Image (tube, rainbow, N blue to C red; front, top):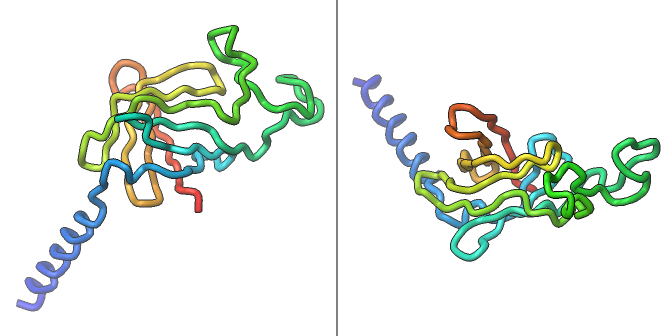
Length: 154
């Protein structure tokens, strides 16, 4: 009988915890570190959808001896497929666009731009905890892609 009560109590705690993690649409709003912890992205409401902009880089300037850009100057979006946009600074670059809250801690229907390779991917974001966001970028179907984990900046 004690075992049954213990299991019932554990189940009740799990159910309460699941409700505590139920996200509201604006719960992703804020500043997040990327997985490498070398950039911060501010997720915000952009009209009826959500977007994200790079607001901080651990190394915002090209280092001495850089082959990618002039040492001491701000890093730019040099891999952008549009030549007219290749001089845009990385800080201030919108890399997350058009995500909509789908319920169950998921935002989808948006796109993620990777300035490291200049490619744009379909995306899905899942709020795992208040401090952890999984961002999946993919081409075509979600099964073919990569998930990266962002952590909320304090």
